[in-house]
Length: 601
Image (cartoon, rainbow, N blue to C red; front, side, top):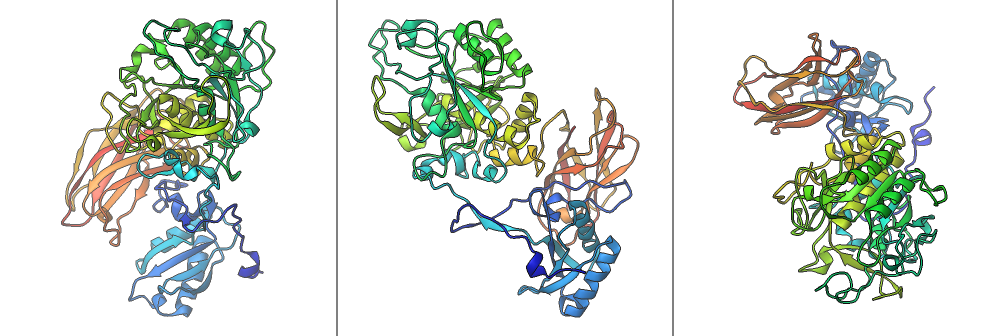
């Protein structure tokens, strides 16, 4: 016996209330078919009330001439018939003000079950549309007093789209090692600081009266004129490591200051930079210890980091010694994020930016251009907000700091610019990912960040990697609620024209070097230009000739282009061989072309 809808409907709990309602973003990811002969795959978003949550109700719009558009009894009968076809018990609930029917599915259906019901409605020529009754909730905006100034987290143009990731993960359970100047006490960060270490072996560089010890407190790195090199001006203390750490994990929703990207994570400060900089040898030991390796004379690390941030660098390509330490850290399962450098030069001439097995991060300004100072080149993996303060301070990155010109004084906040500020954005993202999916390897984290990035809205001469990091899309991807986790990708960029109302065309991709079968979540990325996409039928053809419907023709789909990623259960197919994208225009008056497509295993 079915229970009352009002009693069994799940409630949506919210942490904070905002004036604007937020609707979970939809993604063009198709539910896989059970066999090559089934109906068209239904995109996941059309079967979900929210990412990862199967819909409990559907909104069905009928065409104006259909009996179901006017008669509740007819709509109720249609729901019962569709349910019988799909093997589910459906109920017509009520008529909406728009005239559409609200159909109840029950509360225990899987996404596949919902997709089966959706497919039944989609196959009915009298149905204009069928969509899930999606869950809406207030957008939880942090109550940190300076959050509105953190454009780098939320602005549409060049922000990293962080708030959308917080619904999935906050970094809980992950430690990030910040290999930098150490940490100066700050009340907006202290609750997320765990034990670190002072790896500076030279007392003069350390500026704290001794060599290595277990206290990573930052005494300040100020210098007098000519102290580091002839002609150098005097510099005040930077409190650089504290600024970096705040971007990663400042305490959030505490009614003060700024919000951290992975505010549920912990930061272990490792001190390697002091007066005039820091030595490779100390940095190498810090990398080793942070990732769980053994360093002579240093106690075992009780807070092994799954992510390392190094917002530091120097001239010269990556040395064998540094590369060896990074490789060992990655082999222990630690993701290493580094700044590309601030010399407006090719990052290949700088270390650790040019090291392998790292995520090398360029800086973008508030308009989404490569920041004027940022290094660039083929060794750069990704861009993230780094800001520019040369004209307007507020266009920089706001984070935790200290007002002391030399030694520590009062805590404060200030804007900095640099790839040093861009790197912790990506380190924070890596922490969110690892929190959402602890099984991720460093290679998978890097691949997913690149795969789910978006194009820089501005320009980047010289190369800024895959694009601008997108936190929400990436975290949703690795948590299984959309996007792509990365992996090996095979791409065809050969354009193929699609004839108007003609025969199907095919674009091939030859896959090799894989073992066994294709995955159950094979990602099929499609980029098709067409002036009326409703004319198009799109299929994936496996090496043995089996076909998987990605998109059906629809007279009600009058928009342009098909730019989407579909997920296909291809686990019964041999991975190696020639796969094809088959596209056919089924109606007159419009033409198009396949620009590119790709398979990600």
